[in-house]
Image (tube, rainbow, N blue to C red; front, side, top):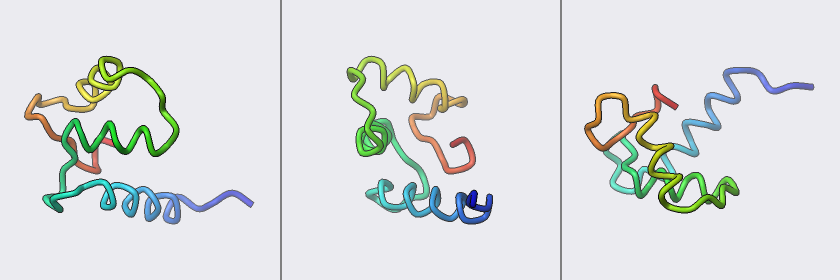
Length: 68
């Protein structure tokens, strides 16, 4: 049986919080790269930087859970 959206959201929140090392409610590029690598992403840093830039819409150097 498929997981509910609520369960998936809770799991995503837990994952996000586990990589938010300074617990400020945001993930910076380094934390984002660690998160993707933990999920099995093996792209070069340059590719991960481009992926982070795509979710950092306001270009402030951080992403919050809402954009993921």
